[in-house]
Image 1: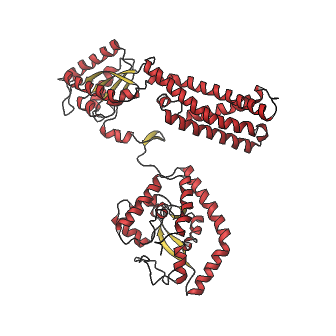
Image 2 (image 1 turned 180 degrees about the vertical axis):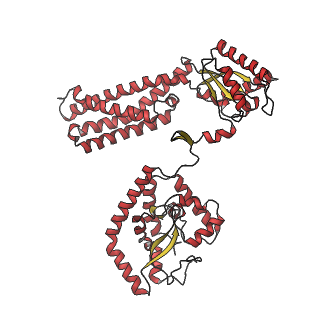
Image 3 (image 1 turned 30 degrees about the horizontal axis):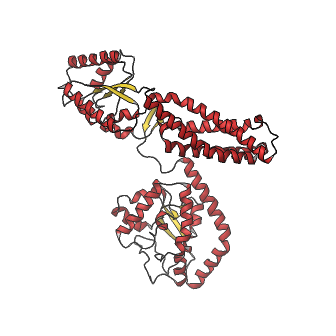
Length: 488
């Protein structure tokens, strides 16, 4: 019965592998140092060639090769360092042509930005010829794409020729685990050759006969020694600790790695990042929407832009303040409780646009031709000028320039009950403008579906945040505000 199961599993593996892409042997990693050295050589040569060409055309050919050797070495060293950090030389990545071209172009750009920054900070810009470096950069953008194409084709040819051998492995485990594990049929595409499958004698309740199990594992030991197996892959439930102990004890005599693959339960957890936590390790079940560096970058942009805008807009804000006070009795600024980052309430600043100052358990949304809106208030709301005082909230750290728009506390409590994902919006600071607003989702929400679409856009923004996205939203805000027809 065990032999029949093994034949079935082996057939499934073979079928899956026949449908897969080119197998990338683990031994392809031995090519990586050669590719890295090759990159160092051609970059230095290109730097010298670019310098001599520029010297010949612009300076009459008085320069020598050693004059441009330093810049070539500097670029080559930086390119290699950044390339290793970006996994450009990782074995399986060497044959990913499109990925290699895109990644190498980005690395090339990064290298020259870093060099320019270093030259500026150290005030050594005079040591480099701008014309030479510009020629070096532009020719390198083309050359790096050609070199990635060459590397990918050479590596593909080497793999197809059989010069590099895949790692030979055998699978050992319970028949149902071997059949259910979705990762095992894909092993060959990642550089492994499955040369044997061994089912262990255990019933559906994970019970096993110790003598039968030992006999089976001795078969595995003989097979590994006779067939030159490089690794043993074990597939059993992680909860079967007694079975795991027996396998470890019997296979300890072999000088090859024995690896335990994740079962269905632990696989979902191990897919997540693992980090150091004092003396132990922890699996990250959820990450913060922004890293510490991203938070600081966003906060820095908020502070600079808000402070500069307030200084420039002081005369305009003073005129608006006076106009509001003259048109109707009451304060020029309206403070209302909103829900902000991490669900914490704060007071938002707005120019008063209504005859009422609603801020309690019941807040009625503004509607078209709302009688509460003043004549000046209608214009301020149309052009979103009433939101400008929120720059003060940005300076106070309660809001950001861009983020999910905060709602009145009464509305927040209501939608939190009606929309399951609503509270996720509070994972980032609320913004003066946001992705939902530039997509036309602003103003009244008489139907729950309208708020659901707004929440979907907010969650997309949280998951997709980048500095460029914030800049794009701010630029789109100006365009959308001028032609909006649903802000009232």
